[in-house]
Image (cartoon, rainbow, N blue to C red; front, side, top):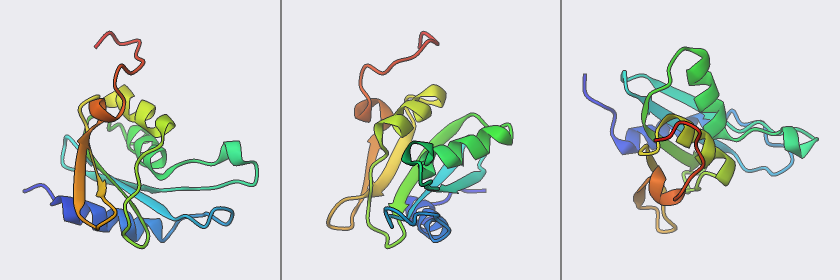
Length: 132
């Protein structure tokens, strides 16, 4: 079985963003993680009227994967419902760092082209207790 293309991952993330619960920001974000085992786990943002209790799409996808026993990830695609790019926030970057400092982050630039970043480049000198 071949890996899905980056375009496929972005499409899955955009489709998942349609399920977003975002009545306050009205920003619908989707994420699709490609796990080492080839599975794809998706997540969308969920807001709360107590803003601090809201959860980003990336963390929803990671936590869903972990709840299924999956902790090794290769790529994560992050996109808005309208297929415009968006970057993971600092909290999401730190959560992703827990599992793979070299995970590939995929989104789109302001021209609509696919862009890719290694997490280590987006979160240099990151915090870890693992010693790696």
